[in-house]
Image (tube, rainbow over all chains, first blue to last red; front, side, top):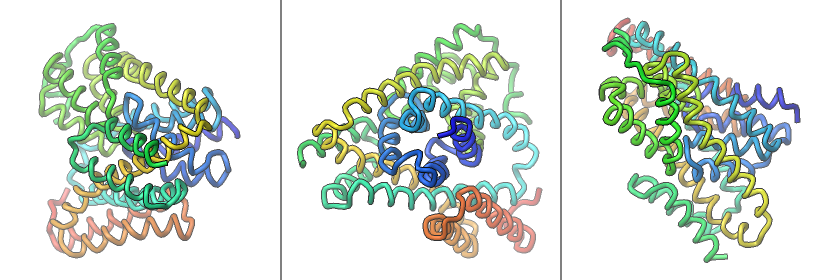
Length: 168
Length: 205
């Protein structure tokens, strides 16, 4: 594991994506290929990121810890602090080009692709956890509760963990 | 007109900026929606840093900025309240507690990872987390699908093609993710530009 290389991969993943989970597909691709993280590390880091306070995007802090301890977590932090700075440039640029159809189309295309790739990553993570009735039921219940937007995320995750403990 | 030019920037002491973001960070359990609501209440109602409309415009810009949207929002509000120093102080206030707690939680988890009870809890927690990932993907997709539907059949076919095609390209044919993202952006930019040029459905620049 080369720390500088890890930092650059994390920076690239965040620079070319938007939203806290947008960098998952790229990190998943790069880190699994190098053997620096496992499928399970990704699912674990996403779980910690959703339970801990702050943006969900902090999942990558947890992943950094799995890859290289506290230095890895701090490298992740450095990598996710830089790309959002470009919002200042986006603000400037947006007020000059916002009505150009190609700009709007480009943003839409990147977002669509992110969702498409993210779906395949989620499918692989689910497969890694182990496809059985319990997994599918808990995942389905979590989707249902999440879609209502009324159940707090923490409550959904605590409930899911409790189901795991009950139905061993 | 610049979003920030609606009225002169408020002067807020750096110490106060730090304190407010630090307390927001500690309270922000429960994901992005809960945190956004907390920030809106602090920035619009309690502190009156920005108007409701400005806040909404800021949030829209954060959607297309790279990286974590809440960090981008913190940067815009930090600049509004304290310039470059405000950006640094606001980000430090937001990141310090939440990042520290995230690292501590991960360390704690790494210690108990192999206990049988942890494994059992994970067998529920991980599918639950993945389910919430599905919800997040759906929430990003929904407005895009509505927009494509409004733009007509061609846009819908292109959008569906990009959505499925990018997933297949990466998962089955091992395209680098960055290539799939930029390629999809280029395809939709071209489609959008052609539609506006030849079908005159959208306003020209």
